[in-house]
Image (cartoon, rainbow, N blue to C red; front, side):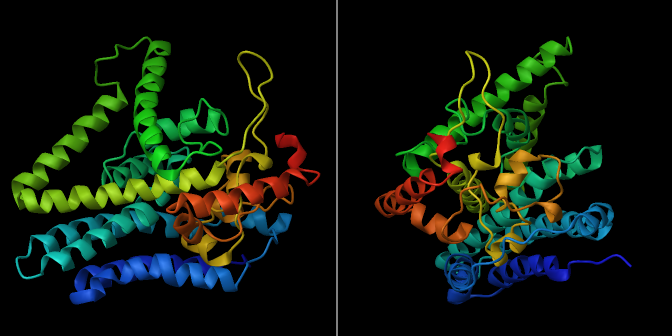
Length: 355
C-alpha cells in the first residue's frame, strides 16, 4: 500500500481564506493579509519543524504517486477561478474603496502564494502540459518571462553576481526589487535570443517565446480594461504587482549573501546545498509546496516537491518565509539578523566553504 502524505491537503487553506476575503466585506477583506503575515509567522515561531527526510522506499513511492501531482494541478483552476472572481468583485459598485484594496491584496497574495509558486514547480517539469499550466499561472501576474529566466538563467548563475535574482550582501530588499525586476526581464530576452540562434530561427518570429508572452500579457491588459473598465484594470495590475513582488521577496531571502566561487573566467563551482538558505518550518513547507527546502531544489532541480530533502550543511533561516519577508521589509532589522546568521554559519565546518 502506498503511503500518502495527506498533510499537503492543507495547501487548500490558502485559497479558502483568499476566496473568503474577496467575498466578504469590511475589514474581513484583509483576512488574507493577517493570515499570511501574522498567523503563519506566529505559528512558525512556536513550531520549528523537522529536518527529517523520507527513507529511500517512501521517496520512490512518492515520486510515482500521482496524488501529489493532482494537488499541484488543482491549483491551476483554483488560481484562474480566483482571478476571474476577483475581477467581478472589484467591478461591483457596492464595495467601498478600502474593501477593494483588501480584495486586491488578497488577489496579489493569491498570485504569489498560489499562482507563481505552483508555476515554479510546474515549470521544472518536462511535459508540455505541465509547462503550459506554468505559463497560464504566470500570466495572471503579468510575469511570464519568469518561465524563461528562472529555468535557464537563475538556476545556472544562482549565488553569483551574474544572477539578477540573488540578493547581494548589504543590498536592501527595495534595491533588489529594482535590480531583479529590470535585469530578469532583460536576461529573459537575452536567453531567448541565444536559444533561437542555436535553433537557427529568426528573433522576430512566432518561435520567440518572449514575444509571445508580451503579446499574451498585453491582450490580457487590454481585454480587462475593455470589458471591466479602467478602475478594475488598475486593481488587477495592483494585485499582479503584489504577486510578483512577493516572488521577488522570496528570491531575495533564498540566496541572500551567499556566493559560489569562480573556478576560471567562465565557470563557477557546482551549485551545492550551502548556496541556498533553507527553512524546515513545517507550515510554510506545506503551504508553499516545499520550496522552503530550497537547498535541495537547487542541488537537484528535477526533484518533485514532495521529495525535497534537508541537508545538514545548508544554512538555515531563523524562521519561515513569511516571517523573513517581514524582516526584509525593514532593512536595518534584516541586516542585523541575517548578517549575524551569516557570520555564525561561516564559523561552522560547512560555512567555511563560503569564504
